[in-house]
Length: 140
Image (cartoon, rainbow, N blue to C red):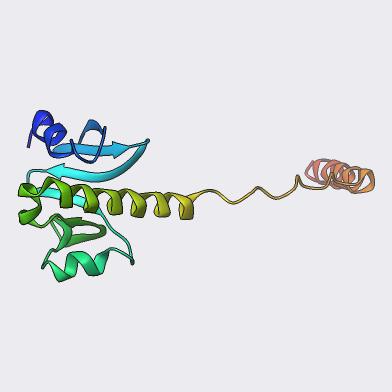
């Protein structure tokens, strides 16, 4: 798949950004990556809400082989081949994939930082300095 093919494929969905990624491309909208176009095919972002749709179509999650094992990435699933000929339905699947990616991004947001640590009391600082000085003097 090349860049022009992907732009045409997502024409009904709306504007997408296509960036080089791994051995293919990452496809994003509104700054959120929702699809991977690799040598092995086109994979859409999926979650617990959309995985049943992929399973019903007989799709499989993205996987790759390392020297020791096969790694399966359950967050990206193969787009059913029939959708390449149905741009309207592909657009609906792309919207669902973007929504799944946005839900995942919300779950990953860093939690609010805790309040700054309380300053160490002056007595504790003085006690630490005294212990340090004692260790120094006893080492001679």
